[in-house]
Image 1 (cartoon, rainbow, N blue to C red):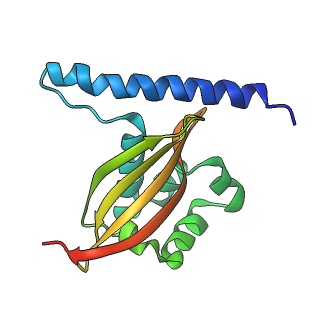
Image 2: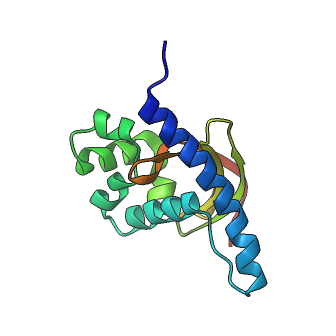
Length: 149
């Protein structure tokens, strides 16, 4: 099966952007400014959109597969809540943990989430650089030991 040239170009561009994004924090730190990689900005924007009940903004940061699966943002948000992801939708706080960059340019980013009931979760986001920017492809959510304060 031949690779789609447009998809391949997006993947290569994504890998290059990932490498550049990794260099930006090092340069910014020299100037006393810390910047997040673009995929973290997208994750944070989606979590914030969920927190304020903005289904349209949250759906806008979801990958193409979600847009194929759901007719609109309202259905998407309802499915996310009903599928056990309420800790993400109602997160009291969140912080970025480790990440890995996969050979094709996708990024797997771990996010520590404090839910309203003080339980701590680890969300594992798979991010892909689509033509519109970094988009969420999937999220795994696992409760961890302990509680937040």
